[in-house]
Amino acid sequence: MIQQFDYPVRVICDEGAIVGESPVWSQREQVLYWVDILKPALYRFDPLSGQQRSWPAPAAIGSISLAKNGKIVAALRSGFHWFDPADASWTLIAHPEPHISHNRLNDGKTGPDGAFWAGTMDDRADKQACASLYRLAPDGSVSAHGNGLVVSNGLAWSPDGRTMYHSDSRRAVIYRYDFDVASGTLGPREIFVQMQAEWGRPDGGAVDVDGCYWGCGITAGRINKFSPQGELLGYLPLPVTRPTMCAFGGSDLKTLYVTSLTENMSADELAQEPLAGALFAVSMPVAGTPVAEFGI
Image (tube, rainbow, N blue to C red; front, side, top):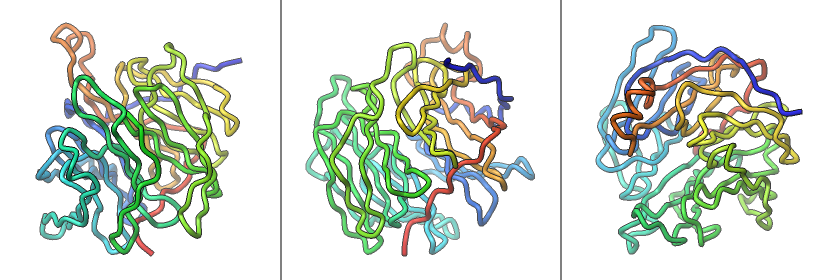
């Protein structure tokens, strides 16, 4: 039986983000980083003090990852960049698609191999299957690992690191791959979940310590919980229809942070959803799988 979860949902920051995305918890600092893709800006939220800081980004910022050197690696429209919070500087690492001007980097996350994985998306209204998934290695080299995508999304790994999850939002499908942690190579792509309309389109996701995949169902106002076998176990309803990504955080990794958007919402829709674009925190009964930091 599919459960409807009633876990407490709190508003952390009513920022009214255009496209809030990529929440990343720092165990070292005990703070949350996240982005507004189209503002574009990077944010740092301290749950203890309730204070938030922001830095402008030089281009649309699809996703971020913490790095072992204390910096942040970011997937910008203009390529992979280093961001140094110490002096607010941005430094180009590599651009995987300089020849495709209508694409931009989107969802990304560091895998158990220490590399930053991020995919692109067609940013035009009439989207085509011209996007790809990339692996940014710690040495700065970039390799492609699959093409023919429309909107790359949903990256996450199983607790043992041997399974990678990845979605194509426009095709409404979540994939799974066998993953070799030592080499960062993928096995054949398999369908993990073919989304139904009432579940929403698949957006960002996270995995808990039991190996269940929690994925934002954008347009459906919910976060779906799937078993490691791809069975829908339940869902968490949210006070907004367009959640974009979730990430486990907090000292015990039992707080699920959720971003949302306001992009392309009408005045009537915004009036009906005053919390659209907010950052939420959900008290969870299960802890999340820690996300790796970029580097070796």
